[in-house]
Image 1 (cartoon, rainbow, N blue to C red):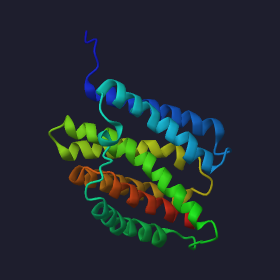
Image 2 (cartoon, rainbow, N blue to C red):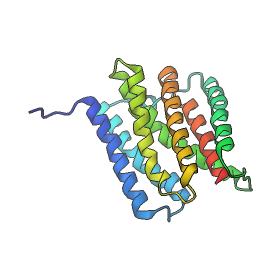
Image 3 (cartoon, rainbow, N blue to C red):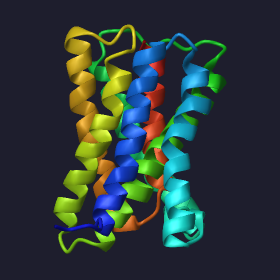
Length: 211
């Protein structure tokens, strides 16, 4: 009987810990603590602490480099992220039945979107996908698996957020999966999280503005 876990199984265990804790958190509090508490405090702790411990203790590598936070070609990455992010931003606005709503809290929504995107991309692309790519000979398969795992991470939030129901929820689910695939293949090509963070932040911002 095999007694030791493979490296990939260890990585999946870290993802599973975050997934389970996040699911329990969303089920227990039902967004009653407020979106700022959820996205600025709870999510970073639940998503980033387990992988930080894994990277620093098990892998013994510097955390920033291990999750794709590289400063090389930073402006190029931000430009790519801005262009692709605009596509998802406009797509979300066009598919929404609601009107674009902009108020004095726009700066707060931008900060919230960036914080949420950073946390989710670091876990899904910077941690999970990066390790899938290192230990897989098939980039396509690695990206598909990472995208599906990322999708499941978003399920607890999507199904416990007021206002996300019916056809709008189905549209969000479809766009979310398309976004995950785009982020994964982009990361596989660039091996940097900056562009994926900007893209996801712009997508999240569009959701905040139409809800």
